[in-house]
Length: 279
Image 1: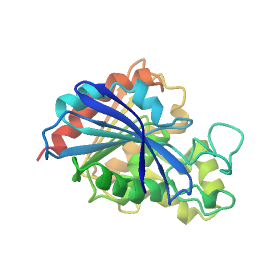
Image 2: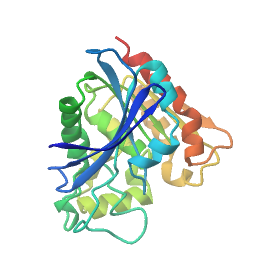
Image 3: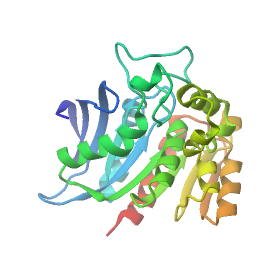
Image 4: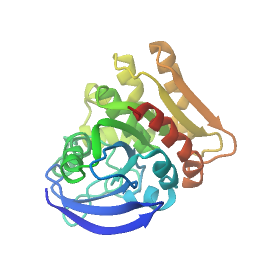
């Protein structure tokens, strides 16, 4: 589990780092980024996880997310993992919505994907243990999670399955119901096979219908998003209403699916999480 430092840069008084390690979950090298605000020796800071969307690596949000000023102000560590295993011997598929860059934050059970595509285990277990071991300033008793698109799907489902781990949950344009999205249907069938019961653990609306709960949820969605038919925010609203989960769903006029949208509202999300991570 040895950690290799790929790069570090000073930003907003803190350190933006990129790191690589040999993952036992995926059986491949995995790269992720961590921003650590300036802090006193021995001080421990809360953690905000960010899960990226289809085709992305850690670099997209690290370079375009505009989170560092807000994280420095609110003194929050920001962690951005990759979206899938990569490299020689890792299977891939044609198209952007399956295979490398499209791990969907699940543990694949179908060949050939089951050898390396274990992103659920990586995000839920292996990477948090690595962060705790290598970043002593990270207070793992104070964690929150957010994500975009496929990563929004990941943030919602991981939080719903692990409600005691996260103080707060938000998302940018999440895939609200993977079982009702062609993106999700393709991924769930390809990675998990035809057992629809196994799919439900990777669908936010199904998890809520089956009894999973969150104390509250913040979601931003652009109303000019070309992928609204895939994302289905209305299904998330219906599921939360039926379950009594307080949902703040902000339909942002004129915004699309890009990092121009994400970076605009990222400071709001960081501040929202910071308030819930305090103390």
